[in-house]
Structures are given as structure tokens and as C-alpha cells.
Length: 225
Ligand code: CA
Image (cartoon, rainbow, N blue to C red; front, side, top):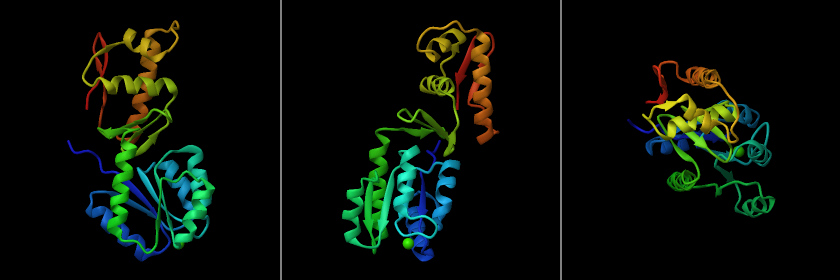
């Protein structure tokens, strides 16, 4: 099974430049999305978390500095700021925006691709690479499926991660309960079943044709791609 392509969100208001970047990234096996107006960035990222954002500094609507700050308030998605002047990079570094890298125009698209690849390799050490379309970010306690952020409760996150980490292994409801609650609490089998039900509903909402969590009759559950 092929790993899903990483999605690069290109935020750029110059159409030719955006198209050039998209071409080069596509040639290197990245999936791309493009936004030209700063106002559209936050809603788009919240709806579908990209793997990396190329963020132009000067944009209609909202500028890159403002956007970078807001993105960092809810996500550690890698951000590469794109500026028109070398002198701006010093200023941006001083603002401590939390961007992962800075690129100055005019740039060679090849260099952009190389930097994107390097950042994603680095980021991969902190995040579980997406497998079967599922990715986990332990720091953020968040999970994504087919590049869409899953809105999971802490218990659902642990449940999914437990099942996913030992794919194919059958877990009894007791075993799952132990891994779900850090301090042991009295919970019933029904509790696990209802969490599984909610989790399946959230996974189905993204990809209705796949059933990742299988019931094993009389025993419990397992994760199987
Ligand atoms: Ca611009």
C-alpha cells in the first residue's frame, strides 16, 4: 500500500508563482492546495490540516505574520515563510513567529522543494508518519485521517492509538479499558463499546468505505487496515 502523499498548502497571491510551485511540488510527489487570500487560510487549515504551509508574507486580506501567529496558537504544522526582501527575514526572526524556515523571492523552485523535504523529514521524527491514512500527534493529542483532522475526545484518541499501535492484535474490552483510563475507574463493557461506536462514526465521516476497527465476536476489537 502506498503512503498517502503529503499535502503542501501554498498561500500565495501571485498566480504564476503559485502555479510554478505547485508544478515542482507535484513532480516531487506532493499533493498541493492553493489559497490566494489571507482571509481563507485559517478556515481552510482548520477544515483539513496540511502537512506543511508555504506562507507568503504580503497577502490580500491578512498578512503572513498575523496568520503565522494564529496558526501557531492551535497547530505545530510546519510553516515556511516566503518574503520578498532578504532584509525582512531578520525582522521576522526577531518577531519569533515560530516559522520553521524562511525563503526569499526570487527563489529557485528546486530549492523550495528541497527545503520542504528537509522540514518534513525533521517533522517526521516528532510525529508518527501517516500510515493507512492515519497520523498521530502526541504533543497536540490530535489525530488525522486522510489528511483531515479528527475531532477526538482524549479517551477516543487513546483508544484509536492503542488499537493502531498493535495492528491485527485482538484486544478484549478489559484490556482496552485499562489502556483508556490512566487511573483505574469502574467502567463497564458498554463504555468501551460506546467509545468504539463514536470513534467509528468519526472515521466513517472521513472515509465511509473503510472499516478500520473490526469487532471480534465474543472477544473485543482489533485494528485492521
Ligand atoms: Ca504576495
